[in-house]
Image 1 (cartoon, rainbow, N blue to C red):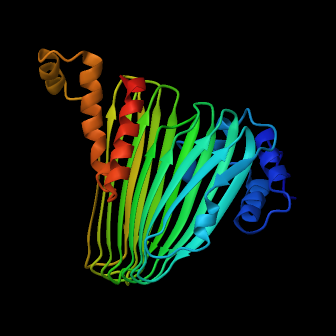
Image 2 (tube, one colour):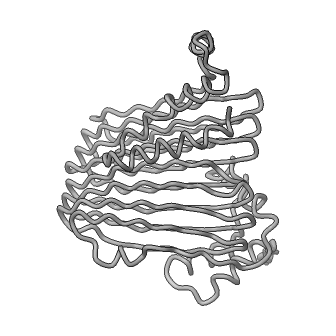
Image 3 (cartoon, rainbow, N blue to C red):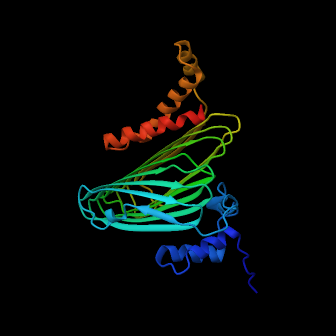
Length: 342
């Protein structure tokens, strides 16, 4: 006899919120009904206990999305901006679109979970032959929010994905990207930065699956975590036997800004081809005390000097954003949030 799962109030609230849903939302409802929310016992969630984080949620909520009209007529040069807001309670939403062959498109997703939210947001994107997507995700949640964002992105031959994600964390913030990479001249560049004050948790989980020959992937994620904050990085590249001459490189680096900062990292390579160039690296450290000393010797207050060093450290992934005005906006956004760390 199969035991009946007793749902937590948050699980039941999400199931109720998705009553009558179709497509991806129906799949999320069924997974929640069958298995509940993920816990540390799930390998891919071992550092991000979603069930525990959502413990205070007991009612359905509402997820509002502004800008969806921009997905209905995607053409070369389209600039789409989505503002996704999860109100208190359990909610979910999703969107999908196709970028036509040869088109270059910019997609900006601004994600915000309000206090008491359990928000779920999912994107499904396909890039046709030679298409290019610049995807920028800005996760800026209330400290008492729980928000899970995910994306499935499929590339055709010769397509290019440039993705940059910045996250200031929440009670639990998770951004997950799964990319299907065909090789055949396609390229993926993934950058990210997380900045976590005390009590904030951010999880960056990514999978790039190389299925054909001659593909390129680079990934650079950097973080800075104050005492009482927790950063999670899980990156995995799978290279099939057919994906010969793949060039895939993954790097994660992070600063621990206090003795009680926590950073958990798991970079992985799963390679079945023998003619490839693949590597991963992970480095954790602290601020350069020598550089901090010399900056203070020049008259800078310690908090200002620390903020400048952290900003310089985290700026590298943001340089991947090709739009200069947007790149400058992100750096200003980063600068204004460093005060909570210093």
